[in-house]
Length: 287
Length: 326
Image 1 (cartoon, rainbow over the protein chains, first blue to last red):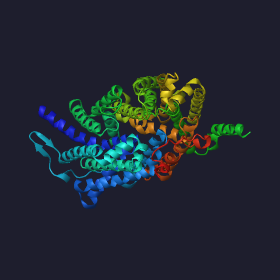
Image 2: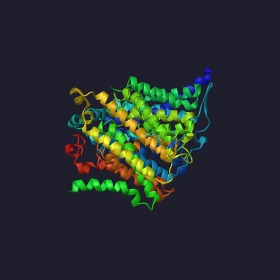
Image 3: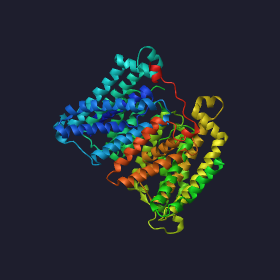
Image 4: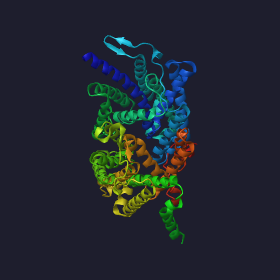
């Protein structure tokens, strides 16, 4: 019994690290410029298709698809910033929701039109047999995704808090005019934030594709997980997203195991509503 | 002269539309769908447009109306229309329950909270066998009496929806001119300033939210009556919430006719391109839909009607303005 529970918790932590990674992109954009990117889930979807194309085109596994997806998505992120977000962030909040949601529809249905509605999956054997640690068995793709997810989320946090680029980005998010007077270009920093956020999302998507089905509407499902994780952890906080991601992963896995798979979402959303009720800024957000 | 003639002309056109297109059932249906969407978007406009609290979870109330109408039939054999008031009551009650904690949140926090609550409700409904679970529930297959409001032609629906829409717009217009309308706009501009001048902001936001929820449930019930079917996705899906928001924002949120204008553009766009492109190009419809929304958000952030009313949003000073960056 306890070894099964341990197994469940470990798999929850691994999926939680992936949740943390793809949510940190969303939270970073929010923290930088108070914009909710409703197209975030569709960025993940594009990264998953990129991984799929890398595999069909030249049989490349995650070693090839992860960096390629990161670069492709970072490019898409920067393009979205310069062509759309830079303009709509000056407008009313409704225009921001409309703009990024329109982008989401555009990306989602372009994928639908180009790739078709069928679910695509990468072969299970892509990464070899499961790993066994004592009584715990972990599928190779999930172990890889969880580990990289944790490492990249932590690196993102370190970039934001320990590097000159991170300090400049923080300066712009706190007071863009003051930052400008110090010789920092707000637009460049915001574009950098989009590149980082979308790049991290790209890595997450390429990793998810190794163990989850890919379809044009998969982003919708994932985006809701990301919204809940971000709101749970605190808007704008990468460590908050990490904590919330891991918590949600474990809670999902344990409640699926104890109560039944259909109720895991109910438990997570109920918990989320309770957190919003008592602590609207989230676990680690600024009030 | 023009000022008098134009509304009369539009009114006459709205009344005679089904006769003008009497040859085409498709266009009659399209007219009914435009009005139905306008009802939902106008209901959303009360809280999202006038009070500026952007709810992305109105599908909860839409679903309450739709499910109440059909569950009343499926479980007790009531005509769907008899379930509608129950749905409205449930929606108002749920709005009070959701609104008390979440309306304290400001801006995006409120939007995110409403998304999460709507998803929670969708998941609950999907697992609730009494409401048909994931399969959904159907209305009466053949009308038993005229009370079932089940017609093959779209024309009766057109006139029912027109009457409901006109009532909602009239009510909105009265609110707009009333003390409450001024309070809501004050809250939208600056909640802190409104409070400091003695507006009971929390109470008025809650009133607007509950009223908006009740009217959204009416839209849901009418949808269920016309289509005779609802499942978790068509009743409580996030797309339902987003469509209400986008229609209102496209035409002009916080303007009386904004949602109607948005519906007049988006519904035909969706229906016509769906039928032109057929099943194969179904994806392409939403590509176009998405592109249009993006372009409007980019170039007309306050909606189309803002072009005529001169209500363009003042540009917020921002360090990213190119003029500053020099």
